[in-house]
Image 1 (cartoon, rainbow, N blue to C red):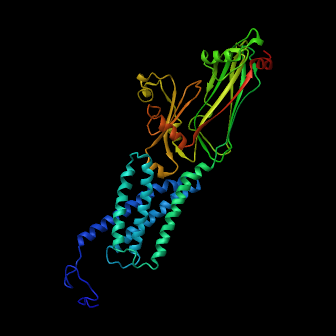
Image 2: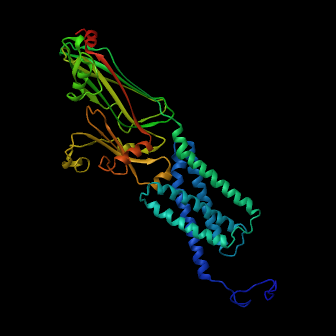
Image 3: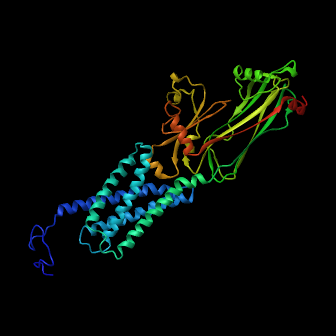
Amino acid sequence: MDLEDPASVCWRGGDSRTWPERAWRRRAITVLMVAGLLASMALNAVVGWPDASGALTFAQRMSGVLFVLSGLVLGAAAIAAFDYQGRRQFRFSGAIVLLGVLITLATDSLLLFMWFEEMEYTHYALVFMSLWCWSVWMLWLLVRGKAWQGVPGPKRFAAGVVATALLTGVSLAYSTMYQPAAAPMHFILKAEFGKPRADRTLPFIHVPVTLYMRNTGEIPVYIINDIFTIRGRNAQYSDRPERGDFVREWKESAEVWGDPGNAERHVRKIRYTKLSSGHFYGPGSRLETGQEYTLQHVFQLPKDPSYDTISVDLQVSYMRKDRGKLDVETFGTPHYSWSEGEGRYYCPPERGCSPRLVYHGRLRHNNNLVNVTRKTRYVTAIWYPGDDDPISSISSFDYGLESGFEREERRELDRYGATKVRANSAVPVAELLTSSGA
């Protein structure tokens, strides 16, 4: 080529004796390009590997694998960046770098979109925000430099990139939203009284109770909190049954004795006495699909009781295992509120807490995209004997159950599929006395 021929070569800022290269600028851009691609590779590996290696569902594992594979592409793009910014001996180096920048822009845009839903500070937020700005700048440089030149069929190349991005987006949406919601939960919970036996030496009747639970759904669960409570009922009966006032008797029981859920003719002043209470399966336990658990419990009843009926109430709070991973070793260890060593943290003296057991542990979402765009979540459960409604909480606060967190707790309980199931049973005392022979 004749470098002096103006029809072939157009010189700007010199002639054939001047090479218009700015070495320091090219090297600086090369360093920033390689550093950004390597940082994006590390971020994609950190986001994708936990899901690729340990996610519960196939869709979540596939989304993790896609992030890991995209990290490998970014590593190849970092190597190609040296050739693209240098001698360009490999004709596809520019296209590979462009692909890496587009992957970075797509993944960081997804992370940024998810972060804007809650706008909670995490260390990862600084990383993907910086990389998003970097990818926009690099895309501008590569488009201006027509980095795709040298690729046969650039339109097919662009179509392949778009198709890959769409498949990735569909997979992530499926694993994040549709798949966890498509599998409903099914639980069987039973509480039944057995045949009582009179004690030969003591004035008591031993009454067995069988508590049963089975996970008949398609998703394993974590037990967050559980309790069973056995109560004896006392009531006053009308002297004249035919004149019982149904509404008045219910109103008196509801307002005076705190029992709004019962309305019976001829019966008033209904009240309950707690006879026995305890854990059923235990917080932090796991119940796999098809797994069942049975607890045999025996409580004592006087041979001449003042109760007319005996009831047992069983309540279990659980969380879907496909929504999150609970640190069961930490959560399953109870903390005693009356212990001086733990009172400063779990029950400050100024709060005047009643004696209770506190269970507390870290919770990770099964989709690691959520973990890197949200604060850490914690599960808190509080238990004490005879509690009518054991407390279970999920929030970003490292203990929970504080004022101002109620709305967040309700949202997080729904997000992680946390709910509760109950079962109850009742038996007349007269039947127990007859069966025991007392």
